Length: 163
Length: 333
Ligand SMILES: Cc1cc2nc3c(=O)[nH]c(=O)nc-3n(C[C@H](O)[C@H](O)[C@H](O)COP(=O)(O)OP(=O)(O)OC[C@H]3O[C@@H](n4cnc5c(N)ncnc54)[C@H](O)[C@@H]3O)c2cc1C
Ligand code: SF4
Ligand code: FES
Ligand code: FES
Image (tube, rainbow over all chains, first blue to last red; front, side):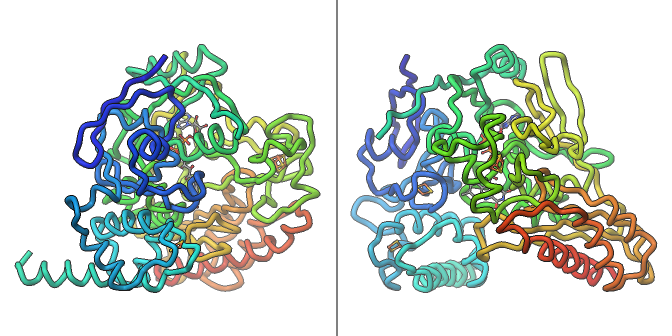
């Protein structure tokens, strides 16, 4: 018997018809055509599949799509309005924070959440709280630089506006 | 590719419904954050429940301060517990153990109940093409004892099984005398975490005292006496996002350089989260000194069972104990 779940993906309503065992990662890529979210290890070890679930970063390869019923999913496609780039994406481009790019959507989703968690206070803190995202090309120094850059913008913008 | 394992996904409406569903069906199992369960069912395919009962929507979430401690509902996530104000202020060993585990993504998914019941990382257990694993298939032997062992246990271990309990959190929890609250068809019961896990002996398949269908609803964490300092130290093959080779949780009260109160537990080296009672006895009343710490470490790592690949853990575990005690004592005096 099929299970029908209703969720929101990138601010749009979505309905999925499921057998049960489908992961959120497979549902995003194969049923919804959102291939920005990558499948690395498919086993919880690499972070390539990171998405936001109700604003918190999770691994879509170890989440059942059925468990997302009624919840809000954000993927890399939903970070910025059509054609635009999110400040974290812009910083990744500026700092050349990728080589092959396979881990990049996961890195970016994780970095967006990290900034939201307030854990970009130092390079050491960035490294520790980004450790769930592996990069086979070892772009780590540039990834840290990109995140530091955005954290600085947020901090100085916050100071300017008195927040 | 083998076909995707089939199972029915069900969402119980209440705790009672959940317990009745799993208790009445030997092929059913609970699904919480899924970070162990879906790994084993969908990816490694070493277990094949026919029904997964999603308990994440049950009203079992949040941390409550009680008169003598904290009550942590079982669906609270690792990140949520680490952010709790009492944990942050009064239980640094719990916070440090939580944040040293897995990654932020996993900690946002993983529940406290699931953390208690996570399965071993022994690679032979997780590889169904390996025939010899007493934990998976009782009586089949143990591939790790003669194979590649490194992440394995040296305390509570034997030739039947050397699988370690991989939780960091549980090391802090056994040091604190935490208590698991269990719901079965028969009602509610309470089991100290130090009695919750079974040292494997010749039945490594029986890991805890839980009966099939029994649900962990909460964990009670008693607070430490005023003035206690505590810490969790994890030693591993890389700086972050890795399981412990060895670890230790310690809590001390020190007055005028004399230890008045001590709690100590070890991780990465035990088949169960390992409480070191004898070492605590040595510490209480002793002066803060290298000698006392070393004596406690010797007692804590008493009578190890090692195989080729785990010998180094004997000395490493002792040094881990000494270092965590030094750190805590420095902060405490
Ligand atoms: C890549 C990776 C790295 C990790 N690193 C660490 C680490 O460094 N330190 C660490 O401590 N952990 C680590 N973990 C393990 C992780 O913490 C556990 O997988 C997690 O805590 C399990 O919780 P869950 O909610 O996802 O449980 P699930 O996977 O949903 O369930 C786990 C088991 O517990 C049972 N269960 C769950 N909840 C209950 C309940 N309330 N009552 C009865 N039975 C229940 C399930 O049936 C299942 O058998 C890591 C995991 C991964 C994948
Ligand atoms: S150590 Fe335990 S879990 Fe690992 S192969 Fe041996 S019996 Fe199985
Ligand atoms: S694909 Fe999900 S963690 Fe690697
Ligand atoms: S850029 Fe290639 S894996 Fe990270």
